[in-house]
Structures are given as C-alpha cells and as structure tokens.
Image (cartoon, rainbow, N blue to C red):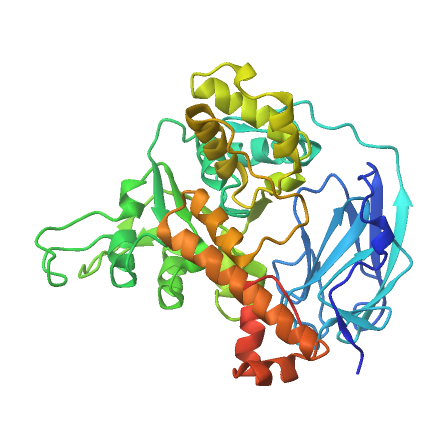
Length: 444
C-alpha cells in the first residue's frame, strides 16, 4: 500500500514568487476518457474540479472516481492539487497525497484514470487595471484577477457561490455584486444560517401563516418574500440543515416558496447569492451538503483569497481603515506596518480592521506572530477572541482547529493510515473521513 502524504513535491520551491504566464495541462493518458484534457493558467480566479459531477471542469466517466475527486489551482508558479476526501485517493507518481505541489512531468492517478501534467510558459498576461470592485478593495494581483469576473457576474442574474475564510469580505462582495448590477436599488436581504435556531430556519426562509405553530400569532414573510425583485444572500450556506436543503432546492428551481402552514405557492423573483467559509466540495463529498443543491447554486463561483495571500494589501487596507475611522494615515507608522505584513491574519480583513481601530483607540497592540508559525493553544484561543466574531463563528474556529490538530497527530502516529488512526481515535473510519473533510484534509 502506498504511503499517505500531505506534502510539497519539491519543498525547496516554497519561497518562489508566482511567475505570470504559467500554463499547466492535464492530459488523460489511461482510463475511459483518454484524450480529454484540462488547461489551467494563472488568470483563473477559482479552483478547477475533476470528477464525475456535472459541476466539474474536467468531467470523467471512470466509476472509480468520486463525484468531486480533486481540485487544481496554480499557486506560486506551481500546480496545487488537493484530494477532496475521495473514495479511492489521489496518487502523484505512485504516492497517495492529500495536498501536493506539482511542477510538471508528474503522472497522476484517480481511480483507473491516469493524467500526465505538462507545463508551458506563455507571455505574461497583463493584470486588470481595476484595484477595487464596489466597496471590495485590494491592489494585489490575487484580487485584481477576480475583479473582471465580479463585473461580469454583477451584470448577470445567475446564482453565485462566494467562498472564503471568515473575515475575507464575502458579504461585502455580495453587496457589491448587488449594487453594481441591474437590481441595485431593490432589496438586499442577508440570511445567516448560523444565527437562527434549527427549528425556525424554515419559517425564516419561507415565512409562516398565522397559527402554523405555537407562537405564530400573525402571518409573516420570510427572507425570500422580503427580497422579492432584489437579491438574497444566504450566508454560511454550508451550515444549512441537511433536512432543509431539498426545500431550498425546490424554491430555487421553481422560483416559488410555500409558507409554513400555507396551502398555496408564492412566486418570487429573487437573485440568490450564497456565501460559505466551508469547503463545499469537501462537504458534498462527505455527504454533508447535497450535490444537486450545490450544482444549482454554483452556476458561478468566486473564491476570495485570505489576507495572508494578498501581497501588498495589508498596507493599502490599513490606511483605508485609518481614513474611514477619521484618523490620519500617519497614525500607523512603517514599523507597525512591517509587523502587520509579517502576521498571518487568521481573521483576515475583519481582524485587520479591528486591529486598526484598537490601535487608534489604545495604542500599539499589533500582533507579533510570524507567517507559518502555529500558535500555542492558549494563543490561538486568545487570537480568536480578539477577532470579535459572533459566538457561533468563534466556537467553530476553535473546534475546527482542535479537530485539525488532533486528526493530524493521530494520522502521524499511525503512519497516515486512516483506518488505524480512526480506530485509535475511537470513532468510525467514515466519521474520521468526514472530520478530515471538514478541516480541509484527506486520507486513505
């Protein structure tokens, strides 16, 4: 059995900067889909998926391949491949990997399908000139690449899934898509799946009639009706109760809702945007999110990069927040900015804004952790507390970090074999795999 690995295929390349114009081609050389290929270049703002699902960029027919088997994206001049908790694993030159960085020349195997990776160089494409989109700001190449896609999606009416870590600005982008599009001036309604008790979710989404349940003394519109003719942002869609997902799918497909306790359909004209901090590809693969609902929502996808990957944006955003808070840019000196540039910002743009506000009010309280460092448990919890998140988000971050570290340790102690690690953890292998999917890992 090949060893499990989550590795960089060439660690010496870790410090490279991203050369523009890199193109990688995945060509299928064995399996049912011989001859198909997938071309990836640095201009693509989102990951490309490979698997059986209709949502995949390279759709396979190999029955040994999972619906969403693996994801690919060019990062720092290399091709990053991530196994999406697939059933049979992703192999690079015979090694089963969770994540790997490729440089070209490798052979991948997914089920019975073999793909050869080739690398080409082309003249560097010019970066888009725009340095903002609505209230979404950023001068980094990572952000400037997504602005043209944002402009196209603002003019359209298709559903969009906005993905990214907590604090990356998903709601800001959703509002910008609304404000820059044809529905500007119409209602913009936000529904947070984590802020409503599970027993009230259906009523909040679709409304209820008087007497539908205890306490329903009056009829009430849900968020779909409130957003009629405008835009509805369903925030943290990855946390939506699995039992409610078919009803949401039905509402999206028919543009109709039925209030709780109601006996007639109500037609609604709503553009739906969905945001999530979770990796929905992992969630679908783990059976925690319906594939058909994901396919209906993800007509288009935007993945916002974390602040630590947005080179040059910390200083730009910090000075912007200074101005918006009524202070002069000189309130943040060069030394402080250098320290902020070296920080990993687990709370992303939201944490940076809080840090600027705290500095203006109380003085220099800048974070000191350097990029790549893992904080001690106490430090991590303290850092989460400093993000000023809602209690549900804060609790989720702490739990996810604990689960990630725990599973990594158990895998390391059991040579990367998931079956043995799950047994040592006292849980079923399938549950272990689901936890790995939630925390961004994979295994065999």
